[in-house]
Image (cartoon, rainbow, N blue to C red; front, side, top):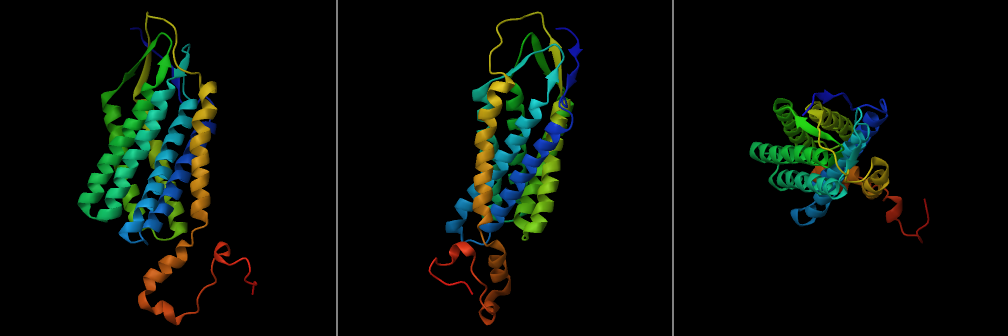
Length: 275
C-alpha cells in the first residue's frame, strides 16, 4: 500500500456543507415539532407523532451525510457508490433515531432514559455515517481510518444525540425549536466532518473493474425520496395547531373562562360564513 493521496471534503466550496447543514437543520426542526406534538397526546395516540419525528430526524441526518459526501474527492481516484448499502444506511438512521425518540417519549426525561437513548441513537448515527463511507467504491485505492478520530466522532454523535433528545422533551415553542434545530444541525455536521477527518485514502497496486454507481447516477434517486418525505412532513406539521394545544395544557381548567379561539382555516366548515 502506497502513501495517502490528498483528499478534499469541500470540492464544491461551501455549497455542499451549507446545503448539508440546511437539510440537517430542517429534519431536526420537523422532528422536534413532531415530538412536541406527541407530548400533548395520551400514550395511545403518541406513537404516530413519535414515529413521524424519528423519520424526519433520521431522514434529515442521512440527507445531510449524502449531500456532504458529494463534495468529497480523492486525487486521481474515481469514486462510485454502492446503492443498496447507501440506502441501508438511511434505514439505520431512521431506526436508531426512532429507538431514542420512543424511549424518551414514553419514559420521559429521566437520566436513564436520556443516557440510554442518547447512546443508542449516537452510536447508530455513527454507524449510519460509516456504513455510507463503506459504500464508497474506489478504483485502485483503499480507505484507512484513524481509530482515535473515529472514537471522537462517535463521542460527538452520542453527546449530540443526547442533547437532541433532551431538547425534544423540553422545547415547547416553535421559535425555540428553530434555535434547538440550529444547534442540532451544527452538532450533526460536526460529527460528519470529524468522521471525514478520520479517513485517509491510500493507492494500492491492485486494480479491477470499478463497481457501484457514479455520483451523478445516484444523486437524483437518493435525494428525491428523502427530500419529498421531509416536504410531506413539513406540510403535515404546518397544518397542526400546536400552540393552542400547549396553551390548553398549560392553563389547566382555566381555559373555559376564555373566549374560544377561532379554529384553523382547514377545520372551518366550507358552509360556515367568515366573520
